[in-house]
Amino acid sequence: MQVKDIIRILDARILCGGERLDYTIELAFASDLMSDVLTLSNDNVLLITGLANMQTIRTAEMSDINCIIFARNKKASAEMIELARESDIILMECRYSLYKTCGLLYAEGVKPIF
Image (tube, rainbow, N blue to C red; front, side):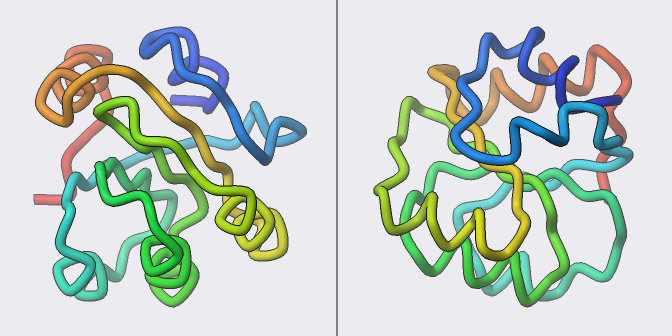
């Protein structure tokens, strides 16, 4: 699934990485525990989280995650957006709960990591 499809499905707002709307996502992982995210070793992963802080961006960078959605109407700070831009991470926000966000994407064919 491409980022532009994710934006449409979730009525998401893209914060940075808008030039990469054709980037393909194959798998998704939802967590607010960044220690769990650090255990991942897959490519083309979408991280869905409600933890909107700098640690989330740094964890994604270390885990080679190129796309993050902040659920539950969480807002990214200017510093977070700048770090994501520097790290070539696509950053989005959506208003849905973590559960609904995952369900909508799963129903459209995004696969879970496990």
